[in-house]
Image (cartoon, rainbow, N blue to C red; front, side, top):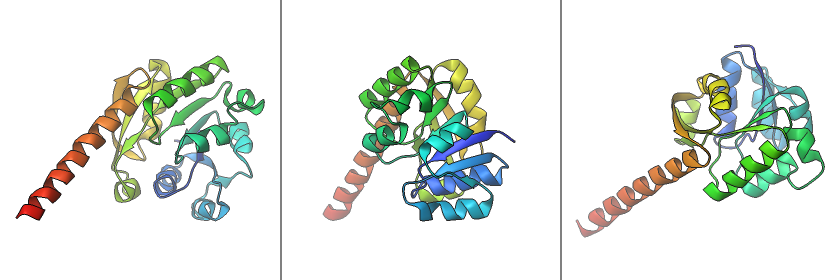
Length: 193
């Protein structure tokens, strides 16, 4: 797979996800706010950008694995003049977990600026990220999902199409709610036992 892609956000989950893309021979350009997090990617063969704008300048499809909505807005330049230049004619793939309403608004802004948007939160932690065993839930325009879905294979053992934005995040949050209630019940049972 020799596609030029961007990856922004090399934290606990993002770094192993991006490394799996490079191992699958994806031509990857990366950026992270803390530059030292880029070094394992550079060693693996990725190009390291000096800024998010440089990532957008080199890659049409850009994956975001960022901590929260303020990190996403800052990285994209949302609300600033550079936002349009960053997202127009790009496919932005949001793989983190944010509020569903935030994602809905982000999609509207990206589409208004001439870009496309795929919501793709993942289920799994660092270990599944390292072993490419994540499950991604996808939402967005079907043409954008069709383009992005095969590109996620080096990171995910399964991808599930959920429909329109924000249905993927609603599915992810539903799964989290179920898991939290199970763990809470288990802890209460252990306490009583």
